[in-house]
Length: 78
Image (cartoon, rainbow, N blue to C red; front, side, top):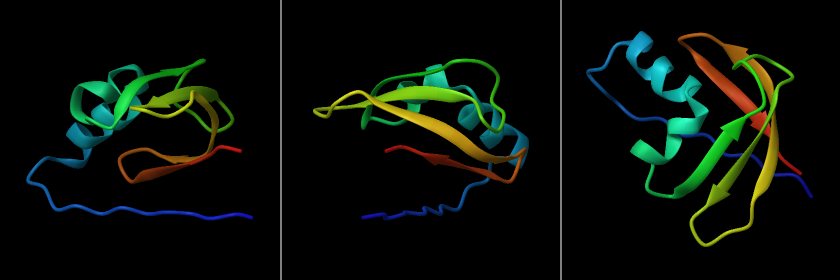
């Protein structure tokens, strides 16, 4: 079974400021209280794999399947 989710929020931050936060995968836990730890095995580009440990959940591997700088990204985990 497959599912997807999408989120949107309004901010006064510039696209570049938001992108710096998103693309710094190791820093996700600094601004997202639901993330215990996260890491990326290379640059923030399509095809690169990483891991995410949500608070109270199991460590999960993911892959960046699309990356559009200053616009958005999609990742996939199984």
